[in-house]
Length: 185
Image 1 (cartoon, rainbow, N blue to C red):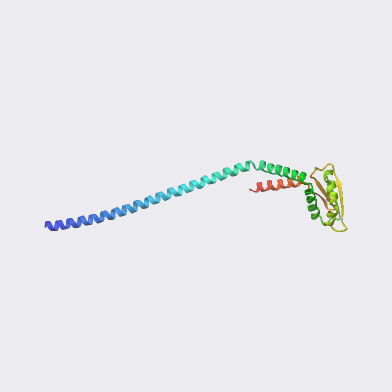
Image 2: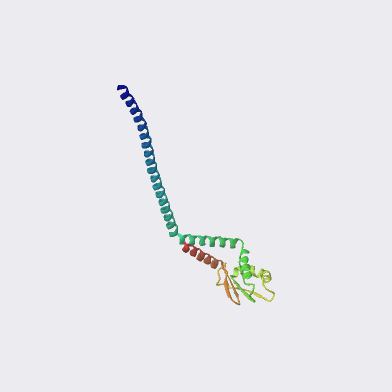
């Protein structure tokens, strides 16, 4: 009987060890899965927090930049004016390119009157033949001085109206386009 009890006890101990090992494995798996899930949730929370932080930083950046849109545009136009004025002082012949482009755009006009500041009159007069080659043979190009224009000013009158191709006007148009782009944001 003692042998049977010892055998049963040994079997029970063996079964107990097996069940203990299985319980440990199940406990380990449950703990591992729970830990993994907790870490994964914490990781997701950190990602959401990081994304929120990034969104807030971008919104703050956009807000800061938009506060200075007008100043940036004004500065860009002022710098462009300064650069163009210096370039035109260094190389006044660049002014004629502005006139050429305007004449090119008005090819269908029969009578073109070009008004420039007196400081540019002589240079444009020297280019009159080239300007006339840009239009039809029957077209007439007349060049006039206008003391009221700025040094970089140029007004072209034709049968359909007039075009102000002054650098100042082009810069104002550039500023307007930039402001419209800013408002589109």
